[in-house]
Length: 125
Image (cartoon, rainbow, N blue to C red; front, side, top):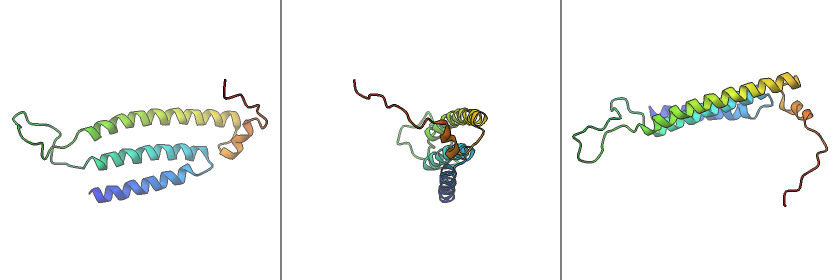
């Protein structure tokens, strides 16, 4: 099971890298969202996929912890899902506003909004 999940993680990373390298800003946003999902699945896979063992420690256990699932990766993934959704929503709204004001979603054409001759500020005091 973990072997197939590792292959799936690699494929999702590959697809997100392809989307991140395109010129369309909407593809860039989808690539960032897909990258976040790939990282979540990677954390889930590294935390060992076990179905039969609950992440509960029995009260009468006095020895070594063997055969108990680790709840930490699941808690990290739940937190990352919430943060990833908030980031995706913000970037989606930011992309929509940039499209409305510039009239394009091509990143090369969006460079027209930048001034060509900018006076550099002094970086030292």
